[in-house]
Length: 318
Image 1 (cartoon, rainbow, N blue to C red):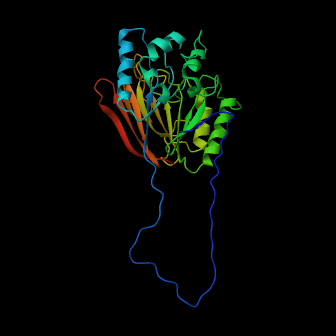
Image 2 (spheres, helix red, strand yellow; image 1 turned 60 degrees about the vertical axis):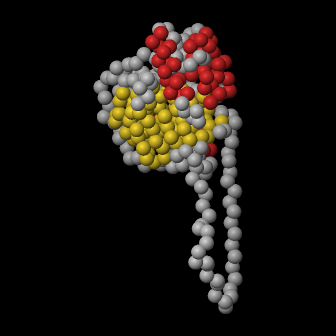
Image 3 (cartoon, one colour; image 1 turned 120 degrees about the vertical axis):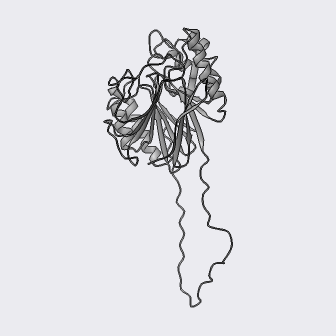
């Protein structure tokens, strides 16, 4: 798994091998044998697993600490997965002590295979994101930026930071365009998934408050990104394929968004359900993706019961 960060452009240029032969002969060519090995084909890429959630470690109560431990135990059983976080990793202010004493004993045991993103609680004073970058180090991307990309199997994965500017002309949006443009020149990364904290679309309490992420959605849509994952609202929700204005779209063009702010923080109630919402659940748990060569399966796993919810299979990449 390789990681691509701002300022470290890596353009992988595939070589083109061509051969030709010509000539004439009065002798008919020898026909191929009737039996024998079949045509040489590239084997399909093996499926890979990505699992995680946002809004994780709140140890202000015993129930909160137990909830974060219950989701960590789910990931304990998925040993081959890369772990993502969709922000608000350590409550309430992302301090060094909260990372050390609350996040660390729980999701911290997966730190070496975690690819995090920050939430608004990491950027609360007095932390302003500093302990987050201290704790995750290079895994969090460039210090102070917090956006980066990496390759996982046949997938290009983009981790963004919804706490720093994402408006047109911002460093993050310019980097995103460059990153996706370079990825399109990479024939082995056919599918793309992006994650960050604040959801543009939600049936939860933050509905309509995160419009700042629309320019990001517009870029992702233009480059044919397949999946977006967010946290922030403490609930699980899956949407139909949508365009950047939240309108239902074709599976050949739209983005499928998931919200999974379910890592252990106290859960939220749903508000009015958006027309494009296809599955909702108020429960603590983790979102698991099986990323295949040209598509994906997803399932939400509830903590405690370990029951699967909203199994979605045979989703196809654009």
